[in-house]
Structures are given as structure tokens and as C-alpha cells.
Length: 156
Image (cartoon, rainbow, N blue to C red; front, side, top):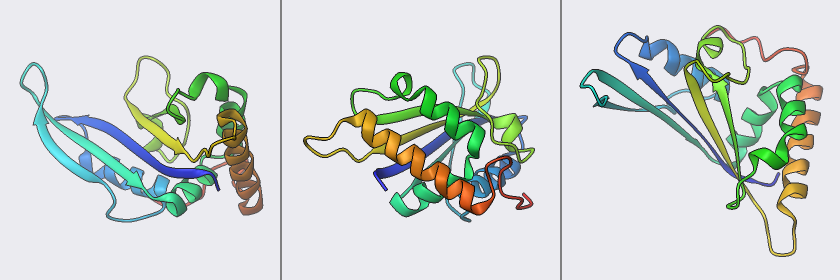
């Protein structure tokens, strides 16, 4: 599958449950102990936790298939707007919905989990075509696993 890596990043303020967000990210990626935490302070001095995940190729493939049919179809439709000049696919998931076990794109006024996938493009290939292949293969894997209408049913 034409993906180098997938990274996820989010921020938890002092009032967020860092353990719950960590478990949600682990559920999304189907792997334990992958979230790196960095304590910091916001511009105004309140405590925050920076949370990051960097997935290798094989784990990125699985995570893409866990996104579900609706989100993958949306990414297919919007692939030209979400792919940058460095062959990275950008999208944002709702942090609040993820802790409920739902994988949905975030709107503009909520906590987000920033997702960036580095697409593997070789000379002579068109990035949009490679991205289409990645998303369509993920959609097919999602269909085979029964995740088209809903994400995997793993308890957080």
C-alpha cells in the first residue's frame, strides 16, 4: 500500500482526561503504548499535554481501514483539496467523538486530532492517483472486515 507513515497529534488541556484520550488513540490505531506525551504550558500559562502518535507503514494501513466507509469515501471525494505539495494527506478527526468510539471529521469549533499521512510516490507517478489507490484499497479492506458502516467494536 502506498503510504510511508501516519501521524496523529492532539492537545489536552488541564481539564481533559489524558488517559481517556490516550486510550481512544490506541483504539483508533489498534495498538497499545504508542502515544507519546509531553507536558507543557499554553500561551497563557495553563498546563497542557501534547499527544503524538507516529505509525509505520503496516500500522498506517490498518488505521486507514478502521476509519470506516463514510469517512474514506469523503476523503476520496476531497483528495485533491487534502493533498499538499509534499504528498501528505491532511484531515482532522473530532477528539470528542473519538472518545465516544466514533470516528468522524471535526468541524471548526471543537477539539481535533490532526491526522497526516505521508504518501509514497515514486518518479513518474501522479500523487492524486497514488492517493486514490491508497484510499480505495483501505475502503476494500474496510468492507472485508465489516467496518463500512461502523468502526470496529473494541471497548475503549
